[in-house]
Image (cartoon, rainbow over all chains, first blue to last red; front, side):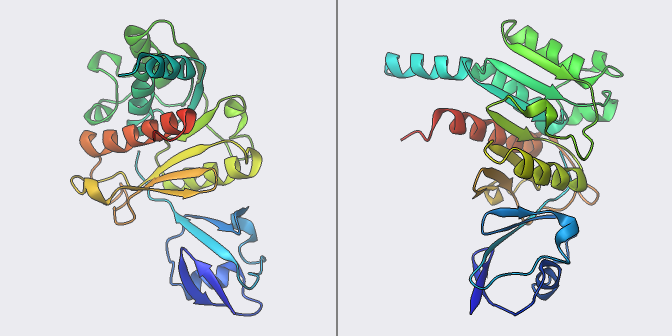
Length: 66
Length: 198
């Protein structure tokens, strides 16, 4: 029972939302794009979307400047 | 170099189009690199006017301060190559319709400044134009540390990334590093169009 977050193996937790996972991973930066199994999840769904076991998750952190 | 290879590359680039969201340090420099490389069509999107402070990194000139970035950049590119098809949109990209100017281009370059707009743009393009290659950049501020920049690929999203860079609210934006990232983005766009050089 594990998931992959930015290529790191992490325990899978039942009924965990994206918002919970970001907290658990201590990803405090506010501006991220999240993909679960290559599908984009829009930000407003972070508190709703549950993470399935064996998911591959990318948390992409955007930094200001350009 | 093999003449057939160079002719093939020239033709392929001429037949291709790239859309650029934001014409600041990233976008203006990426556009000029792509124009010099021979991309046939550029779609340029920005709503801003040129300020004097922009000149430390953006591809504009002192006598262009106060002008719209889209117009000035189009003029600058015309001076390099008058034959490029340049489509400009003097608009602010708003949530809900951000993908619109980019529907018909081969590759999109995200060259926006603040993280919130970057995130919203990437999210919207990935959702609405999932088959379109999107090149984005994160972590351009500061100087030095060129070797920390790398490309992360997530499906059709190619991210030029320095995860240890600070935000531009806490660090300087200077031409060498911003232009490095801009050219990194342009180089990725060329690679996507031509395929990996093996």
